[in-house]
Image: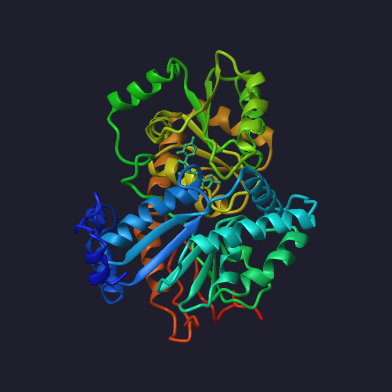
Length: 435
Ligand code: UDP
């Protein structure tokens, strides 16, 4: 939508609550000036992001912040969501699980349902933008229904360490229609014709989940949910998803509390595109108790309060594309124990700014160690905050988006991109680009 179109559409000039200049206090003047300079030639481009949910899960968090900030930089950025019946999301969750390595019975019925719902979405959505970003597998086949007039990018947020070949091979013909694929880590690189670039997500310090909170606001949120604060809190915040290993967290906690008194709080939400969430939540309820609080609720301020007040934050995933919750807690100076998998390993350096664990026993031992040693918690938390400031703040990710948007030739070919200093790598001419 060019400026005159926007005016026709009746849009009043608006600005984001936190425009790019507000980020100066975290990212420094130089970074902000660089971002402004990179955005200038892209002004009035019309860009679209499409994913499968407006809330619940990291992608919707990222898109909430990104779409507002790109608009405030003058890039007309829209956000659409796939519409589909529950059985569509049940199929796409199975694809998601299979891409993270699970088995799948890939029947013709599943493929038909998937492709048919996306065909319907393609009919309803008129995508004639200057660039289209499609996030994750749910809307992936959209591209098959358009005569391409601009670059299309598939942004996959999933841990692709060991994708199930049945699903991967089924999806490859769709993926190879794209002009670029963005993955969170070079380790997820696949053998495809499309150029692959690598960029890790990042957290927005102004989002409800991350913005500063007073001690009284923290107290208020915890009291609202009846969370006791008489003992140290051990916290995991995650969608109710088996890849987040909530049962492993409960087991580790049960073991740790035999040595150190503490309270476990598991908070999760259920994303609209994740039909397994309610079932995983129900399966945990038998473990609820006076010291085991399990809350299914969508409340960003509660997440914020818990990450700030916790003595120990866990993210004991067994697969994790990135794990925004890790950087979110680290930003708040928490001592974080993360599963030694996927994107978590790029955020936590074991023993320096948190701990990495590979089993329930290791997690339990680290909980006990941290509960007993406030100095260690403070040291790790301080280093964790610095790690996020250097590598996992939103401004770094915004700059990488701008670099990518500005890197296509008129024939949609992706030009070679410079390797960023941290938070990912983007070099389609390097080993990431495979025939
Ligand atoms: N989140 C939330 N409420 C919850 C659970 C999660 O607001 O009850 C947020 C969390 O703070 C993070 C995002 O949802 O911003 C989850 O992103 P992550 O990358 O950790 O995992 P994903 O759900 O995408 O697998």
